Picture 1: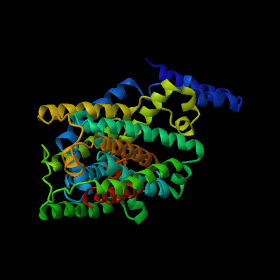
Picture 2: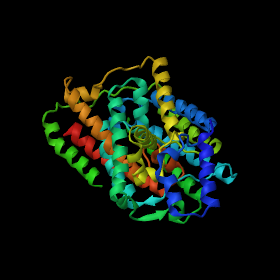
Picture 3: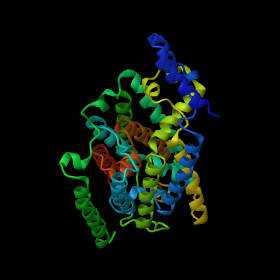
Length: 216
Length: 198
């Protein structure tokens, strides 16, 4: 059951106690038979599965497993997606602020890489318009029985593999361009997090009120 | 990068052909209503992210499930080839948090659709049929495959998708996430308007 963690500790042991050759280090890196199968403990995976069930349930009830509603936002005609995302962001902004203050969560964010964020983001958007489901809502669409989303899964697997393949030919160099490390908006603006969200939240609420007011 | 350029080129080359063959979509289009209020759903998703961050110190994401999935299939089919790819050496394909999370999302959505009487079973969806007709099975397959591939490639370049960047990252005020999610929508809106409203 714990083969993964045993392998991990073996790896770290050999890594630490034997400063041997790079060949040995390399063999654990390149020999897939020495790779574990479970990334984390079975208990945590069970929790992940459960959280996923809740996420999928919410996506479907919110209507964002539907092809029409997802394309609707890209056609600027239906804003259910925006309403869900902005409400989640508002709740999450307030929550992470207080949970971080009391030390109950750590920041889990990615490095700002202008090349990857900008170019990758635009490529993602083009793909989103073609498939109409994004990676998370594609899973919800599969669960709802949208059969074209199964083809979407095949495409997503294919694209992931192509990215991994491109890493062999230096494909990730573009993504690494303009790396500024882990940046947050309030750091960039030079204000405290509390001040930032005190201004950002009324703005986001104003967008939502404006959408309702405009009849969307 | 060459690969993504190739896929993009194919997709862009397809556009004019596609647009010519298409019917005009009625405007305003009769969009379906979601079962629950989007504000309720959004609030609960925000709370869900707070729970995963505090209880499991993991964020809600989806796109890396597909790269782990592809890598896991590769480990079974062609382990040596997978091990030769620098990307998979750095992030070894394993059964991880995001993969089980996405599998859970399929189950959860199925339960929600079943309880709400919204189980679908169609390959071509309403808006698609309105635009491309009821006999467009091959075109839909090409779109879904190339769209999924572009999206996964873009997500790996950007470091996340509409879940990881769009929700988990933006609410933590990450600059990378706000840039990425704006680009997701800029790219998406541009291509969607060309495909459905030209």
